[in-house]
Structures are given as structure tokens and as C-alpha cells.
Amino acid sequence: SICGASAGPGVPSGHVSPSMLQETDDRLEGWDWAASKVAPHRKSVGVVLSLLLAVLLPLHYWRKFALSCSDLRYTRAQAADDWRSQKCTVLRSGVSFVGSCEEERKVEPEEVGVEQFSRCSPWFLCSLAGSACKCSTVVRFGILRWNEDAGTDEWASGYVDVKANSTISCDGAGLGMSQSVEDLEKRCYCSQSSDPDVVSSCAEDPAGAAQDSTELEEEADIELEDYAPCSNTVVPWALVSIEEEHQPSVRCAYAFGTAQSSNLDNHREVQGLMEHLQRDPATQCLVADQCRVALLDPSMALGHAWTQIVKSLAAAVVATVVFFGFEALILRWACRPSREVLSRDAAYARLG
Image 1 (cartoon, one colour):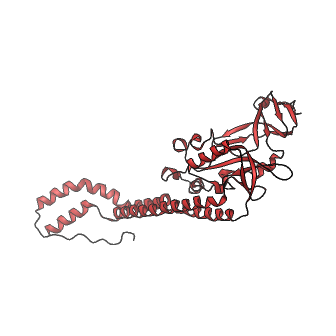
Image 2 (cartoon, one colour; image 1 turned 90 degrees about the vertical axis):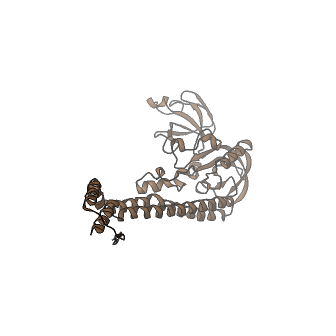
């Protein structure tokens, strides 16, 4: 039994008259009815509440601590790679939001130095439908829509890529296609790389690379942010042109080389990085391979990873202490007999 056996309180000596006992019985009659309804379910309710607290408090925080440890191992492996310094030029920069906060709790783009959250991509708007598009690489004719869940723009199905080397008309006829009703909604986007597929294949999906409490919520099928603090993690990125021997190559660069190691919650630091990239587009990048390009020294990410370890461990310990405190209160409530029943038993004992 969870509650175990319970001995009654000590019974002080004294005389209680039958009239006093009757008065006590009348006064406690209503309470006895309520106690008879609640008491049989106290143990079950206590167990259910204990399990709910176990899911909502300690397990959530300890899993976040485990994820922080995993991030530290990943960051260490990234920092240990051979990163070579190369000159690069920032073509465009931005910030991706990968946190779990929503609505009024979500960080505003202006707080991290951008107008809106976005994902690294080689494409930029060249012209509206029916206008002229000046592009010397590849033109994409399609619709780019905002995805509220992903927090960024995404391509609608049905776009077409056409190689270009001059000014072309942004419509079906100008791009050598049959015209459709959707053409009026489409736009022409020019790639800042002659091989946009390579850039896109190297560009990471920050939301997919981020290990956040969102996936914990989906697994447990509960809204944990209602009970636990949400995160406002962001990933700073830049589309850069790297100077190489034969010709420059365009790649997506992240703060510490990859999206996963560049998950940051220090918004002032991110804002400072964005201001630096906008002010000095010609900079030095650190390159590990064809895809991984860092804007800052990847070893600096170790400090951020350790900070997250300490924060998540402290939160897990506090949550565990709070959990056991609530657990003790719940089990005490579930196991103890009602105050009114004890009072009546004591009165009968004194009468005897």
C-alpha cells in the first residue's frame, strides 16, 4: 500500500456527555457525507497527480539536459575539425527562428537585427510577373509563400528554373513555357549562384537541425510550454561568396559552421553579429569542407554549449526538488484520514 497503516492519535482523558457527542455528530454529518465521497478516491487521485507532475516537471527538464550534453559532444566534434581561413563576401544575411515560444512570448525579429525571420537561400526577388528580370545565372519562376509553422518562406509546387544570361521577361512566354492562370501570382527570382542546387543542398533546415522542446511536446502529446519556460532560440546565417583559385563559390554560412552548433539564445550577441555583417561584408570565413562554412571560430561554440549544460542542469535539479515537494504533499493528502473522522473517533474514545 502507498499509504500504509495509520494509527489513530493519542486520546486524552476526560469526560464527554452524550449531548455533546450528539452535537458533534450533527455538526459533522455534512462533512461525513463529503468525506465518504472523496476518501475512496484520494489514493487514485494522488497517484494520477503524481504521474502528471512526473511528466510535466522533472522528465522534461532532464531530457533537455540530455539534449544539451548531446549538443556539447556534437560541438566538440565540429570544433576539432580542420577549419581553414578564407576571404569571403557576405551577399545576404539573416536569422532563422527555431525556438518554441509563440505569439507574445516569441522574440521579435527587430530584437536580433533583422526585419523578418528567414532561411538561407541563394534566391532573391528579381521582378514581378510581366516585368523584366535582369539575371545572369538561373531564374526561378514560381510562388514563394510564408509558412507560419516553419517561420519562413517556402516554395509552392509548380516552379520552373531557367538558365539566363541577360534580361528576360518574367512570364510564361518570356521563359519559353505555356502560360497558366497562376502566372499572375508568380515572381521571378534570380540565383546568386550559377549552381543553386548545390547551395540549397548544403543549406541546412534550421528547424530540423535544432533539438528543442518541440519534439518532446509532440512525443508526449502535451503542450509543455504551458508548464515549462519556452525557448527563443535563433540561428544566424549568411549567404557568402568564397574566393577560391578558379572561381568564387556561393555557400550558406552559419555562426559556428552548422545550424545545430549555431543555436543561440543571446539575442544581443546575434544582433551584434548581424550589424557587423551588414557593416563589413568583406570578411574572413572559416571553411571545413564543401558545405560547412563558419562566420566565427567554431571553438567559441563550446562556451555556449557549456552555458546551456549549466542552465539545463540547474533547471532539472530545481524541478526535481519542486516535484518531490509536491509529491510529498499529494501523498500526505491522499493517505491521511479526514480531520472530521479523527475528531469523532476521539470524541467516542473520550466518552468511553
